[in-house]
Amino acid sequence: MSGRSRGYPEEASEAHRFREEPVSFVRRSGRMSDAQERAFRELAPFYLIDVPRAEAFTSVHPDARLEKTAVYGRDAPLTVEIGSGQGHAIVAAASSQPEHDFLAVEVFRAGLARTMLDADRAGARNLRLVEANAPEVLSTLLPAASASEVWIFFPDPWHKKRHTKRRLVRPGFPATAARALADDGLLRLATDWEDYALQMREVLDAAPEFARAFDGAWAERFDGRVMTAFERKGIAKGREIRDLVYRRVPRV
Image (cartoon, rainbow, N blue to C red; front, side, top):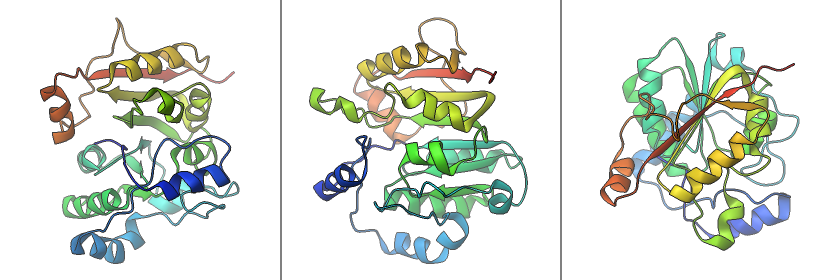
């Protein structure tokens, strides 16, 4: 599932006041179901990382750092999903790979609640969630070179021309993602919008921190991405799903 959201204009105002760069989301704050409310009360103490904030609610204080061993109780490879949505992909991965740790980054509260509920049912104790703006998680909260993989599946395409500046993957983003990735770590992306796929490929091809980890025009579909209703809907509408995967060039 994606990090796409359609929310309320006050979030755009918040972003304008407190951030120099436009955020790639509009935070949804609709009413949660009773089960989702219970998830926050009962499951958030275990799954949801309490992040020190700067000014905005979804910001990360520049001095905040994630202590992996303290959070997960061990030192294991870490996969980070940006815009985890309902959590289908990352819960499936976490429950099937108990030897790895996983971090879901999302600002949609109902999606975070659903992710916690599904993770609890699946017994995925190696998953944690962060309610925060993704670039701030990658640029400050995560220790440098701490992630073995970063996933960005179906981010909001901001398909109107006047909104494309809000896209997550744009010039400047590769350096942010590269900071969090370990040497030879993988950046995996997927989208059902052709022009965004082309933009992603152009931006990452030009980034000195990354090298293609695929042959041909596009990468093969990532087996670790579960097929969701969202992806099936895009296919049913005739939109081709395009995958990309890039390897973090070793630091000098």
